[in-house]
Image: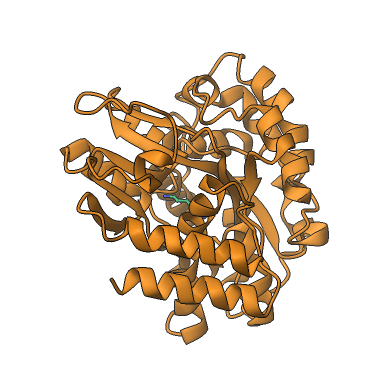
Length: 365
Ligand code: SPD
């Protein structure tokens, strides 16, 4: 996929840039000139735990506005709510492989990146992606691979493999992400197939495997990234499938939280910012995106969330955690070989319906 080539191109410079000095105080010490309250409210629909609250507060003060952020734990939940038309959001935060579905549902309007001066900071490798040629509708926000996490003070995984959850043994307590493409993708990967497989026999094999997984005594259900992190911290589970950033966010406070990318391979995706067709405040929304793309602000967000940062100009300000963890700094060879694969939108027709059917069946058990 084009997206993986972009990331490949970016990684060497990201690694080099991360070795520079980090200015942790960059955003927090800025003097903010409060603007007069305008009564305007910017409404954002975003993945949970995905922004530094300080950045939001300063945007509010500087612009004299209120920012309301509602959160979700899966692309499917986000799309369903927006398609239901229930809420008046200005901005949303879909993953790369949901952008085209939102476009087909007429949920997006062009960003006009010419009106967003800091768009120039986006790293070349993230420009003009296959899911949005010309960046008409999206700017990249953050990215991460998905791994298996554990709390080392309670449990030591005997192997770095998906077999810990997908194998026959039923001795560990674990959760899987509440995310169909992640769960079915991991099962496909464990079986040696692509996370984007559209092959009916391969999907049936993944379904048969997952049918056995969800009836294990150790399977404690599906959860979002932050929920999984909290259950690991509380010692309720031994293992959890998790977006790497959500785990590293907790590891900044508790060093016993660890994550690895299973040896069979895994998924990766880029989350974007999009301007919704019904946005009440498009000018303010573009201003927010522009702020988020400012070098120090962008770095402050990733330093807080521990997610990958697609902003070339923010690299000097990124924290060491983002450069030291191998689960974050993916080996280029793994992206090149397809061991770590970008989740892509599925071709319309039978395969997506099969994914949906598998997921409904798993969730209803
Ligand atoms: N808490 C932030 C979660 C961001 C998850 N990224 C999307 C991955 C979709 N497969």
